[in-house]
Length: 141
Image (cartoon, rainbow, N blue to C red; front, top):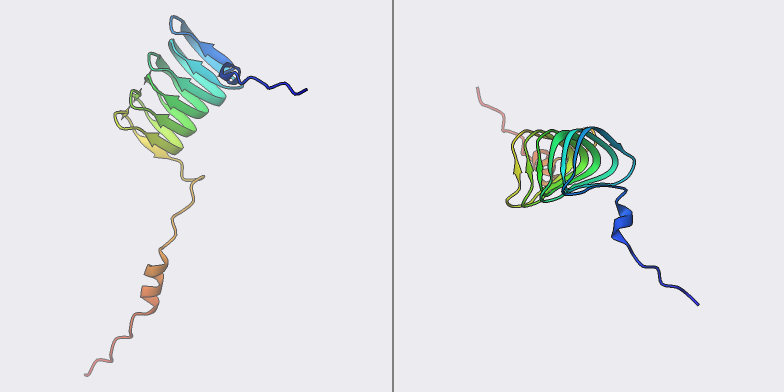
């Protein structure tokens, strides 16, 4: 009566660059991308970019989410960037959320985008402590 649907993870990846593949130029992707080979140039993706453990990317990457297990020589701009224990980023990372696993490396600046991050609010204890300060006694002249 009911047919069980089989989940296929490969359907989540729209573009895949295999381990023994080299690509040079400007890549634009309207979906998710997985890179296992060598990419040189620039990458712009509306979805997620996954850099495999043996991959080398010599390009600037702009994507929604970026996961780095291999090596990226270039700048990364994304909402969420995760650099896993085998990941290496040689460039600047501009991000809202950053996950850096133990062993992961960033050689560059990490810029947390301020416009999309809530400003920290003063602790309630600090506000009440200022309000409760006793008035100083009048000085005798």
